[in-house]
Length: 333
Image (cartoon, rainbow, N blue to C red; front, side):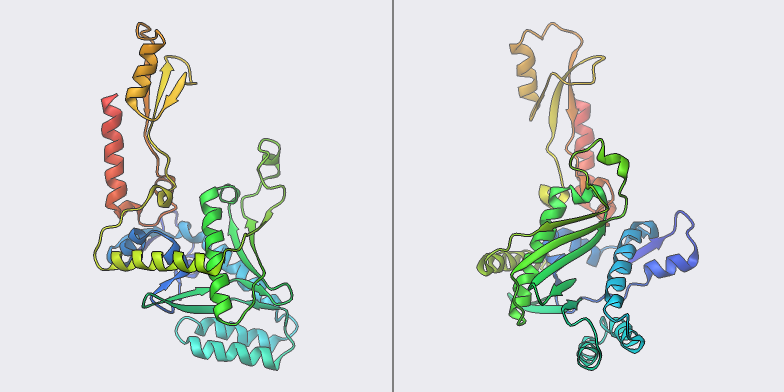
């Protein structure tokens, strides 16, 4: 199965070609990014036809451009080294061994940035599968792993997104150590593409500059290995045909709530987890004779599915069923 690209906003052809030309190949059975994500999403990508608009990938293209720029700066003083490094990047997906050889040749033959290792591909065997991942930057002096992303201000403040990046870095830490690197620290570094100076005034948690960094607590290896074995087992079961729905955490979901409200007022008197509790509150507080009071159903929202953060939500049976159930519950109120 495959993705079908659309261009609903008539972007220029040269731009569309740049976005849709993806040569990335997972060098193993599963990548770190896929592993920490929901098995259902991976299976829907593998087994269904789905659509993506080119505008959905602009953020990813910006991230790729930033990484390529960081990499070029390591070879800015030597044109030949820079060209060879670009060739290594092109070969990485189809001929990783040749790419590795080129990287080693560049490091040994040219005056380059000896302190930092960029975009190193790592592999590890877990439960019979080969797990692969590529960290962004390793600082040899500080023995530090850095995860760089171009992202939005809202995602920098979104706990689920930050937690997934922490998990990813802890996995890279263990994989790096299994490949001979020492890791004493790790940082999440974010370049904020939609930063606005005006929003600092209205939100105390809003980033003060278009950049954010966060120290990542490092976990013991056995804790990470236990997590890896559990996640690989989950994905293997899904690949063998077991239905494994996305969890509320996978969907960035909030639970259903029931608000007791008065007609004409926006603010609810109280908000409850179920309808019975809402009705009990109305009865116990002498509200039952107030004809202007009513219970408003607020359906759970899978924020990730609803707002386009999952590429396969429109072909996902779980999300489609969730929308149907929400509509039915709303009619019952």
